[in-house]
Length: 220
Length: 220
Image 1 (tube, rainbow over the protein chains, first blue to last red):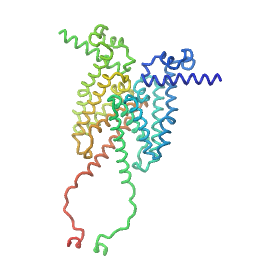
Image 2: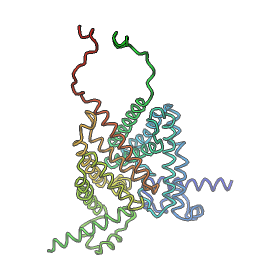
Image 3: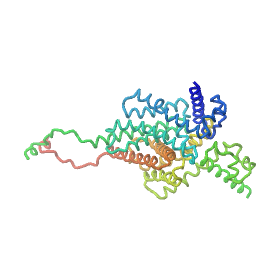
Image 4: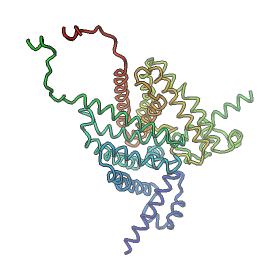
C-alpha cells in the first residue's frame, strides 16, 4: 500500500512537471510551481528527485512510454495502410495545432533546442524520444517497401518524416496558422508519390505478347 | 556625437542579448547578465528598452537585418545556380552545426518554440524572420521555375525548405551528430530531382520528323 501511494505521488509530480515544462519551458518553470500543481511538499519531491534535471529525465521517460499508447496505437487502430498510417501520425500533430489555435509546440522539439548542450544525459533522452518516433514511422515504411525505390534507406527517410513534422509545427506556431504545417505535409505526400512512381519504373515490366509491327518485319 | 554614442550603446546591449538569448534562451537569461556582457548599467538599458520583451523585439529586428548580409549574400556571391544557392544556404547551417560539435540551434526556431503564445508581438516578429528566409529561397525557386512542375506553389515549397532546415538542425542537436541534418537535406535534394523529372515530362517534346510506320499506313 505504501509503495502504491509512493508511486502515485511520484507520478503526480512527473505529470505536473511534464505539463509545466511543455507549457512554459524548462528554465521558466520553478520547482515551486511543480509542487503547487502536484499538491506535494518539497520533501516529497526531493525524496524522488535529487535535482530538477532528474525530474526532467523522468518526464522524458514518461514521453518515451507514452509514444505508443498516446500517438501510435490510436492511429494504427484506425488505419491499416502503412503509408496512410504515417500521415495519420502527422494528423495527430495537426489536431493538436488546431485545438490550440496553432500555439501547440512539440515538447521534445522544444526541449531539444532549449536544454543547454552541457546536459548530455538530457539530450541523450531527447534523442531516444526522437528514435522511438522514427522507429514507428520506419516500421510503416518497411511494410510499404515496394512503394519506395530499391535500396532506399528507410531509417533516413523516417528521420525526414520527423523533420517535416517538427519544422511544420514550429512554423505553424510562429505564424499562428496551420498553413505552414499543411504545406510541409503536402510536399512530403508529393515526395512519397514521386518515390512510388520511381519505384514502379524500376520494376520489371510484365512480359507481353509481341505484336508484329507489320508484314515485312514478320517475314524477317 | 552624443547620438552616435547612444547608438553604439544600444547596439552593444542588443548584441549582448542576441548572444545570450541564443546561447541560453530567453527565460534563462536574466537582465543582469545582459548588463554584464554589454558592460552597461541598468539605467542605460532601461533608457532604450522599457521591458525585457522590447529588448527581444530589438534582437529579432537585428536578425531580420542580418539575414541578407550574414546568410544570403555570402552564398549568392559564391554560387550562381539558383537551386545550388538554396543548398548553399542549407550549407551555412551545416557549417554552424559542425563548428559547434552539433550543439548549434537555430535561434529563431528556438524562440518560436520557447516564447509563450501570449506574446503576439514576438511571434509576429519571429514569423517575419521566417518570411524573410523563405522569401530568399522563393526567389531562387522562381529563378529555376522551369525545373519544377507547372503550377508549383513556390511559396509553399520555400516553406518546406525551411521545414527541412529547422527539423534537421533540431535532430542533429539532440543526437549530437550531423547525420539527421544530412539525411534531411539529402531527401530534399532527391525530392527536387524528382520534381525536375516530372517537370521535364510535362514539357512538349521537340518536334521530330515523322517516320512512316509502314507502307500501308502511308497509303491511307
